[in-house]
Amino acid sequence: MSAFSTPTARLQRTGLLDPLLLTATALLLWQAVGSWTDGVAVTGPAATFAYAGQLLLTSRFWESVGATAGAFAMAFSLSAVAGLLLGLVLGLRRFAGDVAEPLLAGFYTIPKVTLYPVVLLVFGLGIGAKVAFGVMHGLVPVTLFTVAAIKTLPPVLPRTARALRLSPAQTMRWVLVPACVPQIVAGLRLGFSLSLLGVLIGEMFSSQRGLGFLLVSGLAQNNVKLSTTIVLVIVVFAIASNTAILRLSRRFAPSA
Image 1 (cartoon, rainbow, N blue to C red):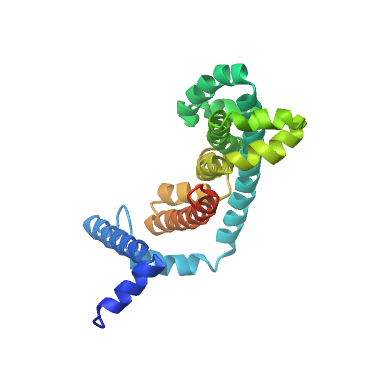
Image 2: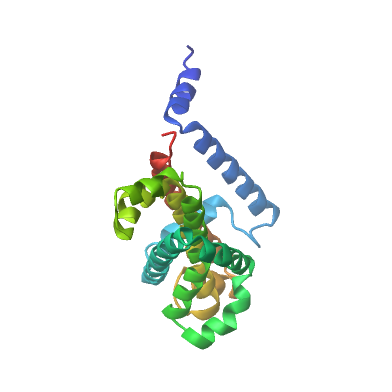
């Protein structure tokens, strides 16, 4: 094996080759767009990373990160817990599930921005509206994935639980939840991303703090470096978080 092929083979064995190629391609496309627009719409990678280094030293940035992180943690926690409980109930009660599932799917297709006036009227400006936007985006996919997981269970599992005279709580804990873990984790992964999206939208429309507010401020002030840097921070966080959740879901996959 030649000296040039050895590093490539090592990267292939460690699974890093594809991510590195994808990252390099994204950086090249990013640089091409930045050069094509002369930095008017998007700044190039070098300028963005330099500005990010300066932004990371400011208290304003970390206050915004803290505001977004707090709202996102609340929104995702509510989406996950409520979605799992609602999904388990609807999955076990077939008639209720058959009625609620198309209603939830219809609500899921509605652009949530159209409900912006209602959310502001109910929750006002501040963290309540951001959390509400996050839950509106993240609750439904977690619920639907959980319902689908329950419905696709082998019929022998519930019958075995009844034969063993397990209580409903014991059936959920020892039979249903372990069997549904792969699909539930997939639903949580989607709910994670959409909850973050909802919080950012809430910050863009109904807040004076957070990364979404910084992004809107950069656009309003024609501060291209600021807006591009905030987008970069959000993308890096989303990719890192989804990669971690994907690895977790693969551990629970039946083929793993």
